[in-house]
Length: 225
Image 1 (cartoon, one colour):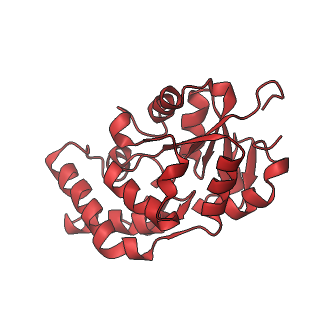
Image 2 (cartoon, helix red, strand yellow; image 1 turned 30 degrees about the vertical axis):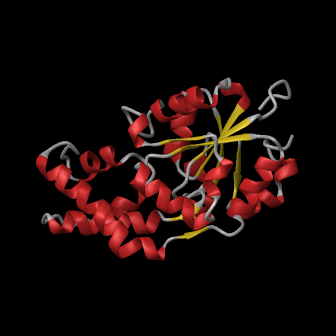
């Protein structure tokens, strides 16, 4: 980050960044695949959470999301997440306070997630009933032809927030966030709470444990300099 380009806006991921949902998504994928006769290990699916769902099936089962089987698995994955695992998902501690602090600094925020709109709504409520007020807009899987790690979702967010990439920072938890943002010319702050190791988060400008850690070190972070 350059002193000539103070951070005016932030693009935030949600799953694994603001809410502790990555394991829940993993189990939902595994259960949905199992219903179609595919036995897949947790360790196979977990590292893929964070890329778009359209990329998970080709990676794991070598089938396309738009195929008949792919559509069945994708739809069941959403149902299973809602029915079995949503109740296990919680916001990371002090996530609401971090968003409030960013808002109080006058820095704009927009969401960039591979989640679908309906799922996103349910996740934001876990942070706080009025969490949506902090965000100028939400960019989801519906706004991007290609999901993370492609740049489409970031480019859509840039267009929505109407700022130059040099004025923005992406906050995410996976290598896919970093890759997507980098392709769009945006610096990334990575959070470890999504379950990734520091070696996997290379390419970010800074790494913090979770929203609480970033909030505690906000003034010395790339966001506060």
